[in-house]
Image (cartoon, rainbow, N blue to C red; front, side):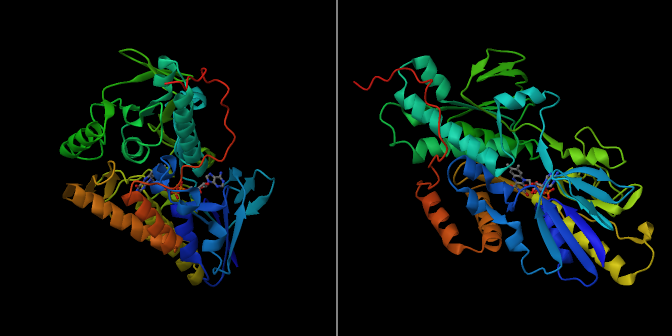
Length: 432
Ligand SMILES: Cc1cc2nc3c(=O)[nH]c(=O)nc-3n(C[C@H](O)[C@H](O)[C@H](O)COP(=O)(O)OP(=O)(O)OC[C@H]3O[C@@H](n4cnc5c(N)ncnc54)[C@H](O)[C@@H]3O)c2cc1C
């Protein structure tokens, strides 16, 4: 039996495990620090109270329950020793492997200003999405009770730093929440005047899309009431306060950081250089240079496609890599010949395009030479995500419930379960 250790049950790791499932001579251990596989593309809907956490996550153990050769462990790997073929976890367990698949994804990056993390919210995990939702909803509750206009203004300002897909999707979703879903829910505040400020350092949002599509996205967001500020560099972040290279500071009770990603810190432990984001440039077969038994998949890979374009950090790329690695491992184990790295097939990325939603009914899609925007693009987005989720959750009822609430502007995920500190609210004046 050959031991395969997969670290990370995200899109790359899970797809690799599925490719190795029930294969003869293969004993797989998949380790993830969470117990669930997360559908990150819909995280922003949890953050903006449209979906609940279980709608977009599924137990890894459950997904792999029919794979009798796969053991799933919930643990965090903290150390790798490529020479010894071992990985050590936070709980002190040492795992030996014949093949390693490192698929630990990306984390939020702050361009060297890691201290900004304590004053900002980010969107990478379910806990992050729930933090954003709790903060935004409780800020509105506080604003409803506050009689201090400056305090209210601050509580009713959401600043989103980063005009990439995550920032754009969040801004559009919050605008929809305020303009449609919550508009009749409060008595002292008007949610439609809530300030959503989208801050982008470069000259346009959605830089991966064409000029026309970014301009379209900006127009759509502005129509929804979002204040889009391009060419605006953040120089410092203090509690509930953003400072810029030029212009006045911005007071915002919710500051969401959607501007940078950095690779998982484990990549630094594989004896190969990483790029500035901590990503590894593997050999064409996705193995780590100098470590033929170690592969990397997903967001921590830095690789060019056949057109010499960087392969994007998106779910289809991670899945394709996971499948490619599984095929190589299966072939090598079944043939039992000595490993010949040069004979391994190179990974070929199939670009299926990407899309971003800009509030309800509008999206941009870029796929090969095709560019779409508007309602048709939004329908495509809806169709693809529903299709994905049906396969993923296998719970049509949940989906129909979501689709119904979504279409009727009546999202179901507004309950804040955690205890909230309401002590810092100005005295209420309910006599109107
Ligand atoms: C908000 C957001 C929106 C997105 N939207 C889209 C979209 O619309 N379309 C799209 O295609 N892509 C989208 N992406 C990107 C996509 O989700 C990623 O490209 C994809 O998840 C990468 O897969 P991965 O396997 O590399 O990493 P992940 O899916 O992030 O999985 C990594 C796994 O590793 C685990 N892990 C990390 N470190 C350790 C450790 N030390 N020990 C054990 N386990 C560990 C994590 O818990 C996680 O489960 C989005 C991402 C985000 C954050």
